Length: 569
Image 1 (cartoon, one colour):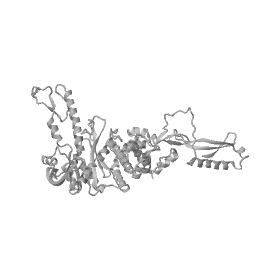
Image 2: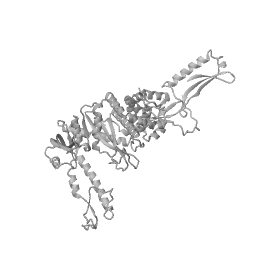
Image 3: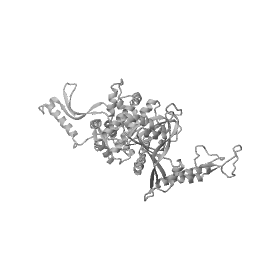
Image 4: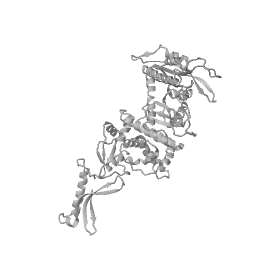
């Protein structure tokens, strides 16, 4: 507040105290009158120095207003209407994401590189906008841009700048991933004694494939083109890096390219790669051994050799717990197929530890899933017409009765041409609950091997987060560079969420943390004040993680901006 000296048309000075504020709609600086005193010539009859007196009074009123003990008085007109163009409620929860974003010095990374670029828009600001939107309000780039006003941000760029920035994100992708890895290692520690790897894919709502978005085996059983993503995660559940592949790439061939890129630049040392049976190939095993790394992979039992099946099903050697869980292991010399220097596939011998275990819970789950599949198969048979079953409904439990290929006449005169293969069900049931893990770590205990493998759920959950909370797909961009830029923003968003989860010691789900950050929002009241209306233990925990006090119900725009500036330090 300050003393305003307003000269009137008659030449006399009129004194009043006014308060400066920023209009939330026009975003322009405005003034509102707080108190009027009168004309200077008349006030001089009462005060020796009216200007000095009332200037000091303005300072005192400002100090009182800024005091936490002072009250806030707001005035509203009962006839006031809502401006459809105004955004009166804004989010401050993004400041938690901003804190970790700046902890990784991602802002400095782009600011330093932009010095050599002839562009006026800020790559750093655009990336932040895309990340905050991806976590809190996932949508297309266009929609995110059009709704920037929902955050306490003052970014200035155009929608075309957003798409142009994606090209630069792709250009600097590998450098940024390495930079982030180093910052995570320095700030939080990075345990790479074991790394977890898995592959998933993301679909596009397009019909025709191109040289990148290809039709392949979709994890979500879609027929539209996809891209594959191989993701590497450390032992603490933090993503390390990722790589995109064409949609028709076989999962098992993606591991070596990802590890190869990390071998020199990331300076990991020896790592043990933990992955599902899809990565259990001779080439992947050979690559790890040659590069002096280790591996822990699952091994199919039903599709294994007779010798392996006999070993797993035999009761000899198992150590059994009171709950029915049992485990055993052996070290064997086994053969793997690899491709030699001449491109010819040959067999080589390796020493390998095999850990077999049986879980009653897994047994029950397998039988439950099979029961559902059999019921579905029986329903398909009952609904079949003219002895035919639709191609998209046939299951492995349905068998056809032999018939004459020329006439189509069914040899067995039963009423239906299909039946449930009970022998196949009986054969499968023998292996319910049994699993095998194979590893290069011959001296590692069975329990440590099993615990390492069981931690694969973290990377599976990570993929679920990208597809649910972050809504990574469908992808709304088409150029290769833009697709790569899109997934880079998704990866950084994912990493920030994982860092936040670690800071709150995994007490809350990812969805709960996101919902809470969304709820940390303030509504404009009056006199440049915003009112916040949500606070609970999760808000408190997020505040502690980012060193922010979210407990205040009323804050001025200036105080809010101070918070935003603070998390950038």
